[in-house]
Each structure stands twice: as C-alpha cells, then as structure tokens.
Length: 289
Ligand code: B12
Image 1 (tube, helix red, strand yellow):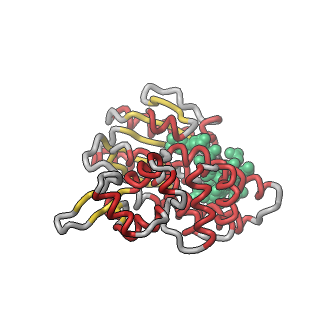
Image 2 (tube, rainbow, N blue to C red):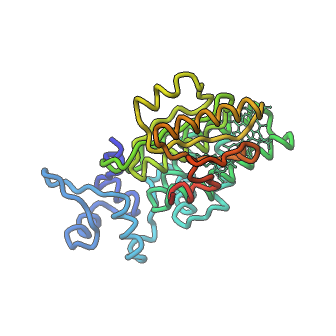
C-alpha cells in the first residue's frame, strides 16, 4: 500500500514535470528519464526518478512541480517546496494548521519528503518550530486554547497521513515500543520518532498518550521490544512520575530493552540508569542512534 502511493503514471509524471505525455514517452524511450515498466508495458514513476530528472535537466523542467497541480495555490507551494524555502513554508504551515486545512499541511510535508528531504529534517526544521510557534501564540493570548488544539491536531493528523506515504523497508531490523507516561498528552514528538524508526526498518508499536503502567510487563513479555522510546513533556507530579519511570527502567532491564528518552519533561526527571542509551534533543539524533 505505502509503496503503491509512491508510483505515478505517465499522466501524473507529465503534470509534475509540467510537460505533455508525449515528452514523457520520448524521454523514457531515450533513457533520459528513468521509469519502471510493468508487465503490461505501462510506465510507472517514483518521485525519485522525477527529482533526478529535474536535477539533471534544468532547461526541460522549468515548469516542474513536486506534486500534481490542481490550483493556483498548489502552484505557489510547489515552487517553495522545490526550493526548500523553510521560512516561507513554516508561515504557510502555521496558517493552514490554524485554518484546519489538513490536506494543505500534508501536501507540504509529502512534497518535501518526495522531493528528497529526510523526515528528520522536515520534523526538526519545519514541524517542530511551527508547533513551538503555536505554543507561543497561545501563551501570548493570540490563540485561544481551542484554536491551539485545532492547529496542533491538524499537524498531528497530517503526520499520521504522511505515514501512509513514507517508504518502509520490508525487512525488519528490530522492534520498538513508543509510549508517553501516564499523565502525558503531548504525543506529536513521539509520533514523529515512530515515523523515523519505521523508515529505519523497525517494527513499531505506538501506544502514545497517557499510556497506563498497568500490565506493562505483559506487553514486554508479548512483544519483547529491542527498544523503548519514552516521551515526556509536561510533568504534573514529579514524584509519582519518577516512580513510574523507575518501574519502566526496571522492566526494561529485565527484558534487555534499550531505552531512549526525549522531550523537555526529562529536564526534571532522573534518567541516569544503565538501560538508558540516550536522551534525544532532535529527530536527526533519533534517526542516527
Ligand atoms: C501541541 C501542544 C499541546 C497539545 C498536545 C497535543 C498532542 N497530541 O501532542 C495539547 C493541547 C493537548 C496540550 C496540552 C497541554 N499543554 Co501543551 N503544548 C503544545 C505545544 C504547542 C506543542 C508541543 C509539541 O508537540 N511540540 C513539538 C515537539 C516535537 O517539540 P519539543 O517538545 O520542543 O521537543 C523537542 C525535543 O525535546 C525532542 N523530543 C520531544 N519529544 C520527543 C520524544 C522522543 C521519543 C524523541 C526521540 C525526541 C523528542 O524533539 C523535539 C525537537 O527538538 C507546546 C508548545 C511548545 N513550545 O512546544 C505546548 C506545551 C508543551 N504545553 C504546555 C502545557 C503547560 C500544557 C498543559 C498543561 C496546558 C493546560 N494547562 O492544560 C496541557 C498538558 C496536558 C498533559 N497532561 O500533558 C507547556 C509545557 C511547559 C512545561 N513543560 O512546563 C508548553 C511548552 C506551552 C507553553 N509554552 O507553556 N499541549
């Protein structure tokens, strides 16, 4: 399913490159544009083929777009996506998130991804700063709490939909469990980490917001995770949260699970324990560790 979404047919490829279908046929026949020929003789394209062509053939692709263009707004955005103009895109994303326009948010994220930006770059340089701006607007009373929820959920939803587009290796290199602590609602950072580990070939289990500690050991017993990712942002009660964390560390030791922690909640929680491999401050670190 995820792989199929990444294939374009000749008509779509022509739309992306801003040319007519006959040019696509000519370029594939001459080998200038790579494609995959199906058993029935149809040409199929990966966005990588088109991006490579754009890079190598500057003059033939003056009208190239990173996704099929349906209206004027798409045309404008594809231009900024192709240029990787994160300044423009972050204010655009913020506007669209506030207006609950999920498909516009998804278009930017998928356009960047298909245009060869690493997921961690998109998350570190675009999504995280936009989420922080949403928080600042809320703190400054420029966004009501409901508006803040809507903007954040729009982004959350687009990230989930992006998961259907990202290419996931078929062979699994490990199992990872992703949890928030039992009083935690902030799960967007955790979701982005999960996406990244899927791209790295991990079999992922996402439990997310407010994961209760109850029966956690049974879960470990069942899935035997190689890694546990714990995200903490807001700590209501330090003592009870620390107690929960300590118990998670104890179970992780029993099952030889390596623990990775992320989020500002760890500023107040103690994670100095033999099972903890690393505290991560960016998604680039998540990708590399
Ligand atoms: C969206 C949001 C919400 C949403 C969450 C929706 C969701 N599904 O996640 C909702 C509306 C539910 C919410 C609720 C609350 N929120 Co809020 N929220 C935010 C907001 C705007 C964005 C958070 C976010 O996703 N950031 C993006 C992440 C990726 O960035 P980051 O947290 O800086 O994390 C970085 C690293 O730490 C790392 N990382 C983070 N997590 C992880 C996890 C892993 C596994 C890894 C590898 C890395 C990693 O990656 C990031 C890149 O650098 C922030 C504003 C802000 N400045 O962040 C406030 C913010 C986090 N919220 C805040 C508060 C106070 C609350 C509430 C208490 C409000 C209230 N009074 O009810 C509640 C708490 C609810 C609870 N029990 O948890 C404060 C926290 C302050 C603090 N720590 O003391 C913030 C900072 C706003 C503020 N400026 O005051 N919130």
